[in-house]
Image: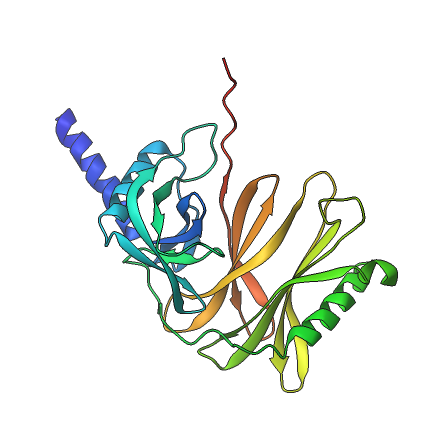
Length: 276
């Protein structure tokens, strides 16, 4: 009877893992699960950190095609070849990660999807125009001043990345602008900003703003990619990082603003073992 109950428990856990498809992100260490998606509830859930659940998730991910396409704005940018799934044990933080190799050198974080994950993968989501660089700089400068940063400090603005993209199947054009203000003698920039704004006719409207003052911990935010959980491309994934840890936010664009639909999926560097 105990054996039968144990088998039923394993079957239940396996079904639960399979029922929640996974969203993953590429990193130098490998491919990390950052969120699960409950198809019935239509909501994102943080992947479990329990060792038994990590084992089940790893086995489920390894069952699929060992060569995974990785996406940004609906385009395949790279491929990841699975070798094994590495479980995170305490005090390491995270939900495990797939070890393997990338087809090409990894230049930026990319999204991976388990085979059961809903939504379109391939779509026209990039907007390859460089004409937004000037307006991204102007809007970023204005946002810094709004946060009380002096005009003199704003002159040290450094634009890190300007990424135009589209949502709602190409009908809405948005721009993600990542920037920082540097200070002499400081490795960590005292301020940084991720600004996402939309082109509305001849005007530009801010839709999302992530401003950070760095004090004891150096960190910031960056835009990763657009995302769909059905036929409508209406979500974006952001990565935040500080003190060697990363975590994630997923937002859904409504008529005039983004609303948060997920926060979590964090992982970090494992503490170094003391040398004997």
